[in-house]
Every structure is written in structure tokens, then in C-alpha cells.
Length: 393
Image 1 (spheres, rainbow, N blue to C red):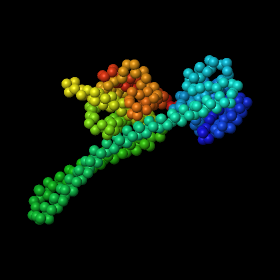
Image 2 (image 1 turned 90 degrees about the horizontal axis):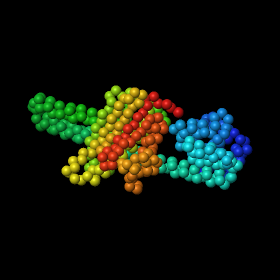
Image 3 (image 1 turned 90 degrees about the vertical axis):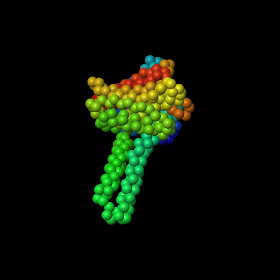
Image 4 (image 1 turned 120 degrees about the vertical axis):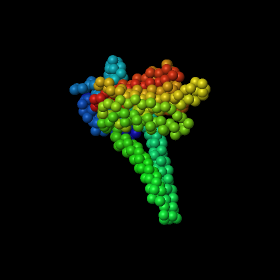
């Protein structure tokens, strides 16, 4: 715990002294602010693991400070514990409704303070570990998808290169054996080599484009906005998520329909996060389609697994629809799909954080909306909107 930084925000010197002594003696690192504005500046210099925040302070109070922390993607996950007087029940309720995780009451009880701080730091650590696992799972999806995407052009390169070598060897032997070989025959064989070489070049270029697009994605730092066409991110997400799924289920085949608005405007987004959000939804669609293909083994049913993606300009927003005719979601579960740790997958096959993180990326980071419509064993459709003008925090 010695490397965990706690920020104390209080304008009362006595409170600061008591809390500082209590937490320092327990081995924590401390930062101190005496008002909300100072706290917001300190947080951006070094992110603490937890914030103890007084309600009543000059300039901006604790409630407003908490609101600003929760509105910023970089600080929204830092747990906030409000400090209130024992009798201020309304303040406690309001603080929790604004996103605080707990409260401690004045006058402070040393053991109570330490117990609450330690509990929420453990929860914070556990949350980081689970999110890291989810990101690794997403990275695994991307890696498998890239490997699959590269396999096809590289196979073409290898095959056409071998064909070119065979053709040139054959031409060399023919010329060596027969110096009177007709010009037309030589030209025909050379044309075959040229055709194969052109194919090698084209598929090599395709492999380079795949690698370059992934390098651009890797260079996108968390929180870094970039101008991009959403059609490009979606197209890449489809390929990577679908091909990754096929690595695990080689017989899995679906029809993919895309209707991308050609007039879609370039907007500023956090590319790496938005890419991950799209992959999460598409991966879920593939899973729903796979389950239905496994359940529906009757040829008479004539089930054709289909994934459809649509983008559309809509005034100040861009709309994205992702539709599949897979297993769907049971009515009683639809309201829970964006809840952290909720999953319908068997144990070990899902963390329950994919759609929760997707919701946060779309709604909290980008100020958009996400809705889901589904009928059990019929379909699922996600409708996302993203504002063209991002309001950055």
C-alpha cells in the first residue's frame, strides 16, 4: 500500500492534520488540497488512487468538485469518499447519487477511516485487474483478427512467388534446351510471370495496409482524439472481430451486410477506445449467431446467420446500427446488459465488462447514446449515436 496516493480535500486545518497523521502512520502517500479548484489541478498533475472530499468548502463545494471529476474520462474512475458531519444525512445521499462510493463522518474515528479507505483501495485494485483482463481479451481478439487478415494476402504472395519461380525455371530450361524457341512462346511465359508478379505486389500492398492500420491504432494513446471516418473504424472492427471468432470456430460462416453512408463526415474520436467498443458489440453478435447455428441444426429451418452494419448522417449526430439475427436477449435481461460484471456467457468465457466498457466509451467519453432492441431467438440491434462536435473535458 505504500505506493498508493490518497488526496485529501478539506479547508479545515484540524481535519487535515488528523487525517494526515492517521493515513501517514498507516503507510499511505498523501496529497492535500484546501478547496475544489486546487484539488482538480492536483488530480491532473498526478492521479490519486482515492480522494477524501469535504462537502462544504469555499469557491466550489465538494458536490461540484465530484461532478467535475466524474465528467472527466481521466478521473471518473477514481473512488471518492465524502466527508460530512454526523447529522448531514441529505449530504450523504446526495454525495452517493453523484458517484461517491462512501462517506466518513466528523468527528473522525481513526479505525473507521482506515477501514473504509482500505476497503475501497482493494476494490479499486480489483477493478483495475478486471479491466486489464478485459483489455487483454480485446487485444487477443485484435491480434487473432490481424493474424487471420494477414494470412490470406501472405498465402497469395507465397503461392504466386512459387508460381513465378516455376515459370522462370521452365522458361530457362526451354531456352537452354532449344535456342530456337519461338519468340511468341517466350513472351507468353514471360507474361505469366508478369501477371504473377503483379499479384504478388497487390497482395503485399494489402498486407502492408493492414499492418499500417494496426500501427496507427497502436499509436493512439488513451484519451487522444483523432480525426477519422467512422466507416473506416467499423470496417476494420468487423474484419478483426469476425476473423478472430473464426480462429476459434473454423466452421463458423456468416453473411455480413454493410450499408455505410458515403457522405459520412470526419469526426474527432478516441480511436483506440472506439475501435474496442465496436469490436465488443460485433464479437457479441458473432457469439449470438454461433449459438443459434449450434441450436438450429434442422436444415428445413434454413437459418442464414447475418450481421448488418449501417451508418447514417443525422444532423448533428452520426448513427450506427449493428444488427444480428442470432439468439437475441431474454426480455428480463435487456435492462442489465450494460451493468458491470453481467454476462450470459458460461463461466470463464466472459468477464461481463465488455458492454459496460462499451457504454462508458460511447456515452461518457464521447457524449453519445447507446440503445439495445432485442427479441429472444430472433434478433439483437444496437443503435449508437455519436455527436459530430465532441465536447471535451
